[in-house]
Image (tube, rainbow, N blue to C red; front, side, top):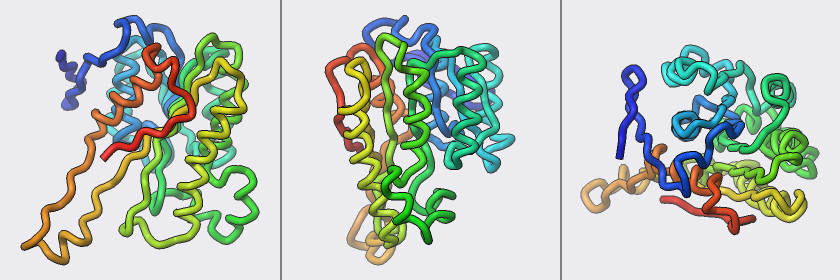
Length: 251
């Protein structure tokens, strides 16, 4: 496997896809390029020849990985927009439309559980928002589908963090997780037949039991962002043409 070094970051270049041209000149949107998985997906897509647009929320400004993406020149665009807000989501899609007027690939890679500003801001009126899909990935997908509908093989992958006991016991957290899974299935059935919509669920390590009894238990390992990114790229590749409405659980 070849490794490409960008500054002090090293990223694997080889990804098992049908052809080295599988992503060449495809337009891809990664909703949050500051999450570890979002960074890995964006860089691997760009290194495979895709035009990549990533969202950068206010907390991610100055991130070295974002600067590494910008160093790729015309292959990558970093947009200062928080896709977890309606205005940010529209800003992100407006940038895609202005630069390319089309979109082939969408990776919803937003923060979840306790990290999500959406959950913090919307707990009080969560029940009012449930009919709209609970999580901001619903709005991004709805906006993006307009730009994707004219493309021959549009693909969407939702990256979802599975709640653990360390994520908090909020009913909203659990409900939003379930809604993400249901929304993935709903879009896979209701978007045009050319679309492929799937999800990758990543299970975070739950260290609470280990910390309570370190003499008896080992901490559970986690799946690396690069490994998750390879699974995401598989679902975006021509090899996954028959995969639709599925959830792949990692970890």
